[in-house]
Length: 240
Length: 396
Image (cartoon, rainbow over all chains, first blue to last red; front, side, top):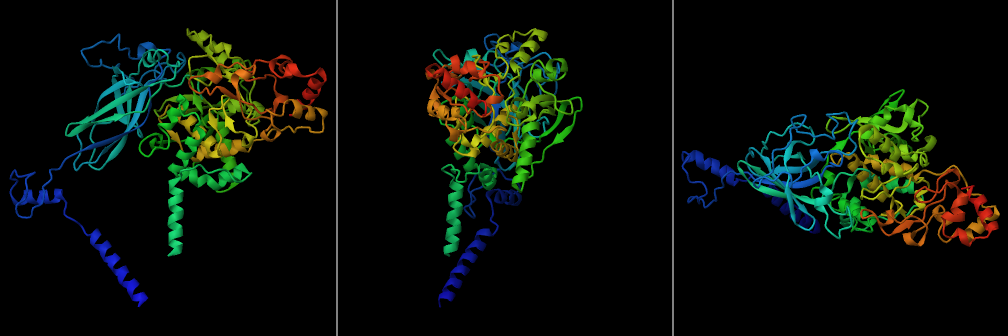
């Protein structure tokens, strides 16, 4: 009797699992069928009177997270860094300097002088992960802005983006992100030439703070998202 | 059914990983062998160990790691891995590539750790390429050539962006005469930077004030170099770094320290496969000095009486923390805004007989001077005590 009861319970669970795994019609699939049957009548986003199913327009949506980054180090090459006081524009960042390659890398990567003449010169960069959690490809995904704030929230500068590439392959990022796909992006940017001066406060213990970046990522066919970094620092010149 | 519940409970306990795992074995290497899967596979484990080791979470050094390492979402865990593929630098450059396969035995782990110690690039700097091409300066700056004529602890590699880099490994600072763990007290990277500056029109004179056997490890705008330490008997130590910013609650803390050093050394673009820092930590924990304290000497008893409360025998003649302003040491580094705790770690004295630079800034030239004037308690000793203690110290 006990064994029969256990068997019955098991069967119920198995049936429930099978029902759970049966393919379901999604809103997108229904929408496609609907479009076919009604010769593309413009009835998307309306209630289907026949079966009360909500019709969902295919869309794209970005998700993102911060991975790592630093503000570079321009101690020995301040002219390569960004000085907000010297580059006062009409509310937007100036054009970044041209890099040695398509990814726009700056000095500090030894491209120009083989690392023989500069001690502390490293270009700023950050790595983020972007995912397309929508139904269709996201087109022209791009970094729209990099806004730097002090640790206490005060806005410091909008920093120029130099280049965006695939962080794993180093290939230039062309901007297309297929549905349900994600990738790691390396963003090279121009860090502050005088970070120590601009990011610390009176009474602050010297080099004790960095800055927070707000990275706005947008696409042609998706709402923009903002990724906030933790406090980022100048790349260490001596530390291990 | 009971068995199933036990398994489920076991898994749920493992996955929670709230509290760091305290070492229960007296053999640290064995403990690391047993807990390698935790470190390699469990983010929760690594996160808990990180938090336990950063006992001053408000310090920028700690904040940087706490906001980036072992996070539930994003952070350094997502970084692509880098391959340890390097070429030695000198007369006979040799290509070396380290495997990231998980070693299966204690011997395999230690063998990999030894390779990592000597060859994995820890910190790359522009001036190191310049230095590596000037063999006439090596001896003056404390760089040593190995039997093949290559600089010990200096390697070249291709960075994640495809550029050639020159870097130091653990062995450059902690591999004197090819002995892993022995501080290179003649290494003068500050002077190397200063000479590099002279030749390239940069004012690097401050670096030149570091002195041999010291490195400034805090990028805090203050010149506060500290002596390169020996890496002996770390299993007896409660903290690492002179200012004790990292607490060694378990051996995993050392592996995390190494892992995050490599990440910073790669400009935060790559992380090492975790086999690399775990093997390195295991290897470093295995390092012991070649000397043996002669406890039959009368100076041993005198040392125990006069010095033993701080320099404890069961802590490799080192100890816990001491307020920096209570000793003669320069307190600058202990007050660093980046890593300063206000304390200094009482250093282990193992290997002191093989040194010729002493105290936390390596500015005292002899043990006699340490006891006569460098150390605050030397003044309270009789001449006979000093002679006996010196004799004992020379066996450490």
